[in-house]
Amino acid sequence: MEQSFIAYIENSIKANWDLDALTDYNGATLQYKDLARKIEKVHIIFETAGLQKGDKVAICGRNSSHWGVTFLATLTYGAVAVPILHEFKADNVHNIVNHSEARLLFVGDQVWENLNEAAMPLLEGIMLMSDFSILVSRTEKIDYAREHLNELFGRKYPKNFRKEHIHYHKDQPDELALINYTSGTTSYSKGVMLPYRSLWSNTTFAFQVLPLKAGDKVISMLPMAHMYGMAFEFLYEVACGCQVFFLTRTPSPKIIFQAFAEVRPRIVIAVPLIIEKIIKKNVLPKLEKPTMKLLMKVPIINDKIKSTVCEQVIQAFGGNFEEVIIGGAAFNQEVEQFLRKIEFPYTVGYGMTECGPIICYEDWKYFKQGSCGKAAPRMEVKILSPDPENIPGEIVCRGPNVMLGYYKNEEATREALDADGWLHTGDLALMDAAGNVTIKGRSKNMLLGGNGQNIYPEEIEDKLNNLPYVSESIIVQQNERLVGLVYPDFEEAFANGLNNSDIERVMEENRVALNEMLQAYSQIFKIKIYPEEFEKTPKRSIKRFLYQEAKG
Image (cartoon, rainbow, N blue to C red; front, side, top):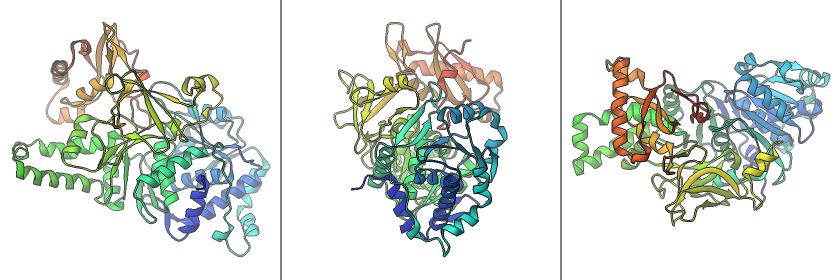
C-alpha cells in the first residue's frame, strides 16, 4: 500500500471530477475540477515567483473554499504550509510568519486589516485569499505572475485543462508537510513540524473508522488552521470526494443549527463546548419540567420518552449523521451521562497537534463512558505509572502520527520526544485492562494539596460547571488554598430576576454544595466572580496560564 498523502488528494480529484467539493455556506461552490484548476493556477504563481520545494507558505484567514485551495496547492506543489489561526493577535501572526521564514503569506480580508507588512520583512509577497489579488509585492516576479496568470495558464494548457494533466508532488513519509503553531492552554506557541506520514496515517485512520463516501456532505466548523478541524473536517473529506461546507463566519449556536438543518451532514465533528451549549440551552430545560421528571421515572414511558428526546437531539444536528465525534477538550460529565442515557451516537477521541492529531479513539458502539477511547490504529499508547488502572500517570505515545519536532526549538523537542521516539503528552490518565484511556488532567495543571495529595482541577470544575448559573469556571491555588474563578451565566440569572448580589449569594450556595461532593483536601475556600468570559484557545479551551496568578 502506497503511503502517500498527496496520492489520496490527487486520486480523489481525478475520481470525483464532476462532484461538488468546497462550498462557502450561503456562497459559491467549487467542484473537484474547479479545485484542480485553481490549484494549477496557484502552482503557476508559485513557479513564476521562483518558489522552491520546501519553501514556506503561510496561510491566515477564516475557513473558506479558497483557504482549502491555498492549503492543498501548497502541499501538492511540494512547499511547506504554515497555517495560522485567524484568531491570533497581529503581533503573534507577525512572529509566526517571521519565525517560520515564510516567503509568501495568503490572508483573509479581516485578518489583513490588522496586520502590518513592515513587521514581516522576510515576505516576498502577500496575497488576498478571496481572489488571489496582490496586497504587497516585493519582487517583480510576483507582479508578473499575477498579471499574466490567465495567459500563462492558457499557454500551458492550450486545448483545455483535463484530469490527465494532474501530476502532483510525490511526498516522502518523513518529509515536512506543514508547521502548525499551537495555541496551548498552558504556554505560548511552538511550531509543530508534521511530516507527510502523519497526514497519511490520520487520513488512513479516518478511512478505517469513519463512514463517509463520495458525495456525502460535511460542515466545517472548527478552525482549519487547527489540526483537529483540518484532519477530520477537510483533508479526509477531500480524500473521500465529499462536499465540505465552510461556516465562514464565527459559528454561533444559531448559525450552526441553521446549517445542520440545511446541509444535514453525514458526520459531526465538534468540540465539547458546542455540544454542551446545544444540550444545556435547548434540551435539558425541557426535561426539567415536573411532568417530564415524573415520566422519566416510569419504566415503559421512560423508554418512549428517551427515544423521543434522542430523536430531538439527532434532529438538532441535522438528522442524517452516523455519529458525533467530540474532542479537543474535556467533556462535561453530566452532559455525557445524559447522552449515554438516551443512547445518542457519540464518541470522544483524544489527540494533540503533535500527532496531527489522533492518539485515541473508539467507535460509539463500543465506547466506554468517561474515557477517550483506545490507542488509534498504528499508534502505541502507554501510561507511565506503576499501576495504570488505579494511579494516574503521563500518557506517552509513538507511531507514524508523531511530529518530527518543534521548528527551530531543539530544547522543547528534547523535552517532548525521548530517545525511543515516545512523545510525552503532559496529560495524566488511567488505562484499564481493555486499553481504554481516561484522562484525569494536564500534569501542568495538577495542584498539590496540603499533605501532598494530587488535585485535578478539571474534575472539580466539571462538578462546579453543573451548578446553578455557572457558565464556566477555573480552579486555581492561592496561598495554598483552592479558589474557584467563575464566569456566571448572567443572561439566565437576569432573565430569572436575579441581581448581582443574588448571584453572589447563589455562588456561595454553590460553593457549599460543591464542597459536600469533594474530599476534604480538595474543597474550595471561596468563589471569585469574573465579569466576562475567560480567554480561550480556538479549540475553546480556557487559557489557564493567564489566570494561574490571579490574586484576590
